Length: 463
Image (cartoon, rainbow, N blue to C red):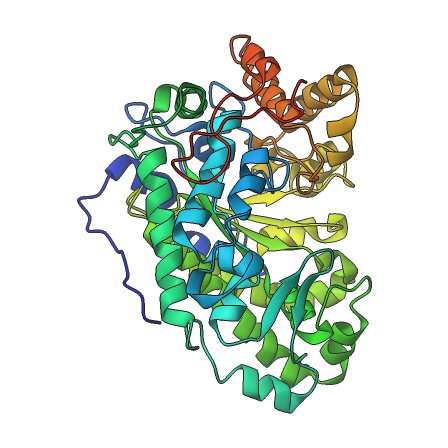
């Protein structure tokens, strides 16, 4: 694949390795009928950051919180950054930005500096590994991913699956760019026993990083990739679809071609996530945006084994940040009927969307024996009066206490029009930190734009 691998020796941070690597199987040996074994409790002498503790089934001293799409259009500094029109790996638009290491790292770090969230998530896109495997794909503003040549026949599938991740003219440089971006992010976020480098950052950005790191001294980075069905749906449909009829038709009319397609998607996305982990990510999430379009039977028989394969590949990777395997989150939208199957695919935690009761989901996932969960504030509430949102935050945190561990998040991504100050205020509420809330109310006085820019701005950010 044109990239280096980053496996560590047994001398790496032992307490972190023990937390997610105690059994030889773990996520790597999970199957659609066998949930991943929960990670054991970490050593009291080396407490985990709240995100990793919760994903390991612990109750950290503060509730961890991050937001899907936290790096994006809701931040004025992100919009200024995108005006640079980065061209990573020779690509333009969104894919070019994702594949420019400086842009991707800066976009990843911006919400941590501003909000003090408990995790960064790599600024990337689920289409990136497809592009780096030779698929002609672009992301059109207002539309989404558009594939030049949709995959509709057995011959199309055979042509596609002859390629691998990195098997394109842009592949090696693109994969190297992902690794470089991850390493740059981890260099600022820090690692166990290794504080991050923050030279030259404005005072407000330093305050956000300090709040994020807390007493633990570092902040985890989450890697991610698209689940096999969601990638296949885009490849077959050629663009976003409401019902995914063409994908479902192929699934039912040519089982061999469908299995070959999803096996390829599983390998590509699993390797893409593994690449991020080997470069330094401390956790990862598999996104299945469109799995809710399937019946439970179709998901269980024709999709779940491939999601399990993607999680297995990702679960075998070792992170140099923690010295071991990392916790894996499985998230989808409209997936209430298949939550148990998503857990059984091999993740350590399951994300719950905002259309599903969190309390019901925890019961569906096993009640007292449930896995850790993530979610599930309704993104629509971000524009509601604070009193309404505040009550929803408290209710979500209360419901999450029924699970072994709970990570507060939205039930989907941050809407572009969201006031960033509201997100900072959610973090303060979740953390129970009265000192951090005034920071949210004061707005933003850090730089806006590219790394090293001295321009400051606040936008419309009073909460």
